[in-house]
Image 1: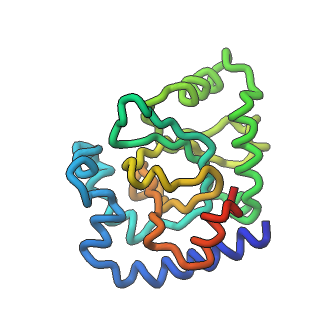
Image 2: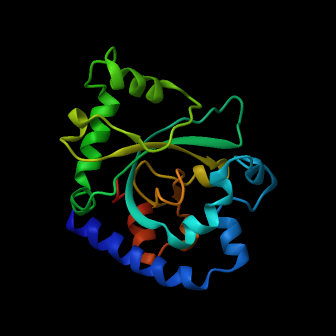
Length: 200
């Protein structure tokens, strides 16, 4: 995990410098407002209009994508991804915790008939659900604060996403949305590790 932490630290440092000089076109691309279909997605929500602030002030966090759902028949413009992330210093210092929780969710090692687990089960099964900052039951996280969000990415971006560790911008005080940091804003070390499947 030390290599992963070093790679993410390098990426975080790179991004923190880059975002000081973001152009309007950068903000448009990062906030997924660069195409007509993307501009329509969520435009009636408060979060849509807070993306610029979230991009400029959000924290780049180590997040874990453990599931996606591509409707190859309907060819929908946006693809949902199930993302785990945490504001916890402990979790961000030991990202394998996220991977372990993802394994538990994928194997459904919980009783789906009870309370929060019932809702969680529905979230995991719903192909086009809407959820942000769903706090996972502590029984699944060994007591760590871990959130689950479903994030929709344009198909052209989604096609390049690898399940596993991914970079997202988050700041709950600004927005309930989290934003995927696209590869145009990655440093070379992170890009190489990502596409060679070293962050799975």
